[in-house]
Amino acid sequence: MNKILMSIFTICAFTTCIGQSFKVSEKINIPGNQGWDYLAVDEVNQHLFVSHGIEVNVIDLKTNKLITTIPDTKGVHGIAIANDLNKAFISNGKDNSVSIINLTTYGLIEKIDIPGENPDAILYDAFSKKVFTYNGKSNDATVLDAITNKVIKTILLGGKPEFSVTNTKGLIYVNIEDKNEIKTIDTKKLEVTATCSIAPGDEPSGLAIDLETNRLFSVCSNNLMVVVNALNGKIIKTLPIGEGCDGVAFNPKNKLIFSSNGEGTITVLKEKNASNFSVLETIKTQKGARTIALDKATNRMYLATANFGEKPSSTTENPHPRGSIIPNSFVILVIDAK
Image (cartoon, rainbow, N blue to C red; front, side, top):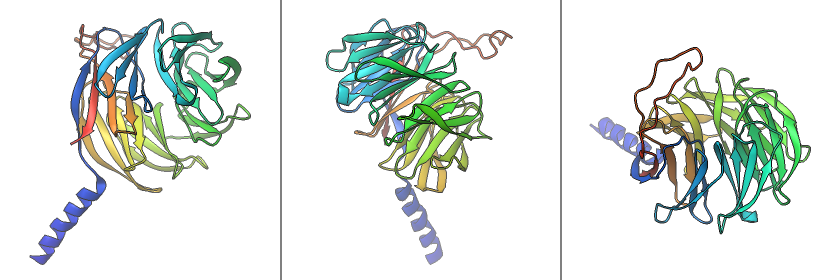
């Protein structure tokens, strides 16, 4: 009997230790029937920026209401927030440009044409005061001076870049999707200084970092998250995640990692220490919710998705077709602890 009670106590204690469960607590409806990509949280002003076709929707996170829309962002992919400069930098994939927006007025400061083709993910590095756009068609990164808004360099990457993170001390890490690599960029030299393979991870997209343990979390299309030592490029562990992942977020407060999976789930993983990781649970979300943004000020997470019609048959030209978006179904999912 004592052994049974002890086992129950151990299980309960372990459950408490590993954290809370999560749920979709609210859905924020947004007008428009176009596609989407990344979301970004302005934690200082408590606003959420959402890529949405040819515009960016801005939501007040105190009320969960749409407060404004930023136009003329054709093929928008990403938004990088620079609170210290009161700017947002938006990558416009269809016209090879970056829109620079005032965070107070949402007005256009300047629109910059860049030499890179199809700017996708975008990163602001406060340490160097530089912006990096990752260009999917030209396989390079365009670097802008975030103060002067001028293009200062192109960095060749030798493959298709995806998401990127900074160590806040002068190094940038970026996934290279078609090479199954992570490349390290020195923000002073503005060149690639290291390349590491993340095989067996395939087609990495989302990337997050634990600045304390120097661990990178790269999520891949073959349902794996690869944990990498950022200091030497060595793989620490691979863990299973859901299908169709395109984003990942790390919460340093509770050491939880969240993989957003297009199948309609979030895989929650725990970093127990620098070498010990495990899968905790699966959160049900909604099909298509493949990118994620974490508000570290409130611990809430946000994902964009919509309802879809019937998926057409695969063809040689379009091997991975998607069903068309059902009108007026675009929504932001709010994820909270239960």
